[in-house]
Length: 212
Image (spheres, rainbow, N blue to C red):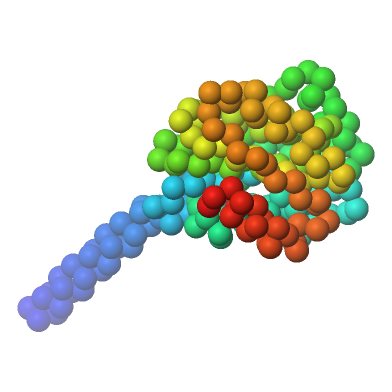
């Protein structure tokens, strides 16, 4: 009889532990740019969202450990205590610079909307949305337009930023002001790509100038 009681108690204990572990696993979210439901990653109470597309391969000057635009985005995120959403293409761009240039030109000529792999974030709870990417052919990469077409930024403060190899903002500021003519589009920040790792002071000075 004592053995039966002990076995019953042990079975009940194991069942309780299994239920606890299952509940914990279901409450977690993905550690990528978005959770499985598409929510942006961050602390949960942020009023700003930093959206960015960044690359580590196919870069002029060689591959990187961290993309230029991502470095700038992280400086913005830290200062603003913002959430982040990284745009991940469904189809990877080429690993070489020359091939990437060719793809970018074709996308521009065809006004393409490359598919985004990760679910788009719910932007409804944010007051300010930063949008960053490298400058390709004087413009945002077309995958940024895929994102912009897929979310509603009405009523938001929109802030562009870019990394570049000499083009500064290119046509990005004009594009954003035209696309969101009824919204508040603030002055964008251009950072030269190779200087992105040392751009923290420039980023913070820009944000303070904008009133953040």
